[in-house]
Image 1 (cartoon, helix red, strand yellow):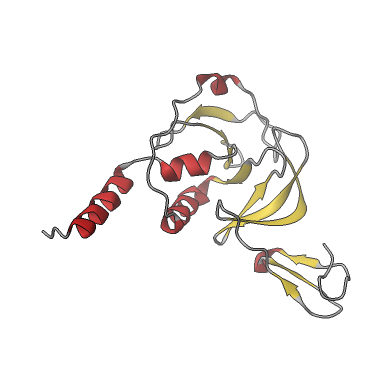
Image 2 (cartoon, helix red, strand yellow):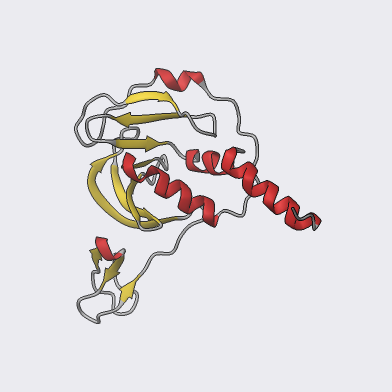
Length: 176
């Protein structure tokens, strides 16, 4: 990436989530897209398990992940999954919708972990969204295909029902 101010190459400062120009000292902070994702557009050393091209660095909130610009899948540490879900739910203004039925043929695919090359476990996700996820029990990485975070966030669930009931009570003027 080149500096928009002077045209010099910019350096990625991954932990600070921005690009820096050593020549004119300007900084570029990528904005969030409609999915809450900040794509840093800098290749990582990890390859997409689906497309076999380099994943780029990206962030959801303050959580770093790897993103495929072709298939739009995401690879991240399993330990950050709930943090990402909570962040996206807090930002979401979407109304819940019933997700489409799970596509059981997705259980038949074999993905290799892009970090250790072991076969990832492909299984049904136990939460809302009717989807199949892939995880590596060795590296503790989770792979989600395009739109799967959105399906989880928009699906009705226990947390959604509580929030929706509170909103309906606020709108109707009913108080307990």
